[in-house]
Amino acid sequence: MSAFIPHGALRALPRVDDLIFAARPEDPVLCLRPAVLAETARAFRRAFPGDTLYAVKCNPEPQVLRALWDGGVRHFDCASLGEVRLVRGLFPLAIIHFMHPIKARSAILESYAVHGVRDFVFDSAEELAKILAETNDATDLGLFVRLGLPKGSARYDLSGKFGAAPDVAAALLAAARPHAVTLGLSFHVGSQCMEPESYTRAMIMAGDTIRASGVAVEIVDVGGGFPVAYPDLSPPPLSAFMAAIARGYAQAGLAAGTRLWAEPGRALVAGGASLVVQVQARRDGMLFINDGVYGSLSDAGTPAFRFPVRALRASDAPLRDFAFFGPTCDSADVMHGPFPLPADMAEGDWIEIGQLGAYGACLGSNFNGFEAPRIEAVRDRPLLETAGLTTRRIRAA
Ligand SMILES: *Cc1c(COP(=O)(O)O)cnc(C)c1O
Image (cartoon, rainbow, N blue to C red):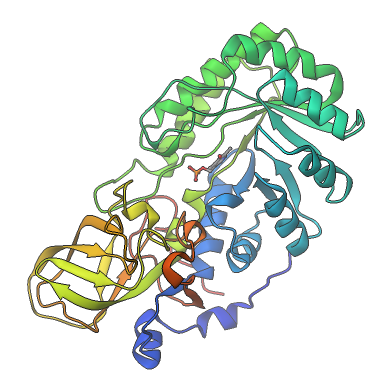
C-alpha cells in the first residue's frame, strides 16, 4: 500500500494558528487535515462489513482523494464523467462505480471503454437500455437498481429525484439479471441521517424487493447518509448505524453470501478540513467575513447548518452569538448560525470554521470575483470530533 504522504511529513505539517499568524491571509484558507482523513477512512472501513465506496461529489479535491487512498479506500462512487476522469487520472488501480441514475450516453461510453468502469446504476428501463446500448451489450457489467425510499429523518432528503418504486425496482432487477455479472440493489437514506433505524427499514424494503424480483442479487448497497457531529446535532456513534445495518441484513431475509457496499461521503471527509476566514467589518452582531454562501459556506446559508467556530485571537471576552455576511453584494449571502464567538470580535480577526471537508469548497462559484480558497495541509485535529469516526487518536507512525 503506497503512502502518498510520508508520516514524517504529516508530523511536520504546521498548526492552523502558526500558519495563519505567519501568513496573515486576507483571503480565506482551507485547512486540510490529511492524517484525519486517512484515519477516518480506516475507522469507517474497519466498522463497515463490506466494500467502502467514497462518494466523490462530497469533496473531489485531489489531496483529499489521496488522503483517503492512504486510508485504504480503493472504491470510488462517481456521478459524472468529470469525476470518473479525475479518479482514473489519480489512481490507475482504483475501482470506479458510476452511481448516477441518469447519465449522458457519451459518459457511459467513455467510462466503459476508456476508464474501465463496469458498474452502473439505473432506476428505469430506459436507462438500462442506454447502458446496454453504449457498452455494446457488454458481458462484464455490474448493474445496480436504485430503490426509492420514503422520506426519512435525514437532514437532506435524496429520494425526491431518483429511485424506483419497489415493484418497478423488482421488475428492473429481473430485466437486468441476464445482462449482469454482478447484480445489486442500492438506496440512499438521505444525507446526515440521524436515525440508525432508517438503514434497518431500508434493508427490509430491499429484501422484499429482491424476493419480489425472483432473481438472485449479489450486492445490497446501503448508500451514504452517515452523519457527523455539528454543534446542534450529536448523532449516535457510527457503531449504532453498523448495528442497524446488521439488524436489517438479518431481518431482510437476504440470501446467504449477499455482500454489502456503502457510499459514504460526509462521514469520511467532513472533519478533514476547516476554513479560516477574516472579519472585514463588524456591525453589532453581524460579522462581514471573506467567504460565504457562494463560496465554501453554501450549507451555512439556506440549509442553515451550524458549523463549529473558534476565534484564533485569544480573548477573555464572554461568548455571544454572531451571524455572518458573506463577501458578495447579494443580501442572500447571509449565514444566521448562530455562531458563538468572543463578544469583542473585530475587524482583522480570523475565525476557524470546522466540518467543512464535506460539501464545502466544491459547492463554491466565482460569483462576484471571489475565488476558491487556497488549500494548506495542517496537523490539527478536527474542530469537532464525531463519535466512532474521528475520536480515535492518530496512531504514532
Ligand atoms: C451524495 C451521495 C452519496 C454521499 O452521501 P453522504 O450523505 O454525503 O454520505 C452517496 N451516494 C449517492 C448516490 C449520492 O448521491
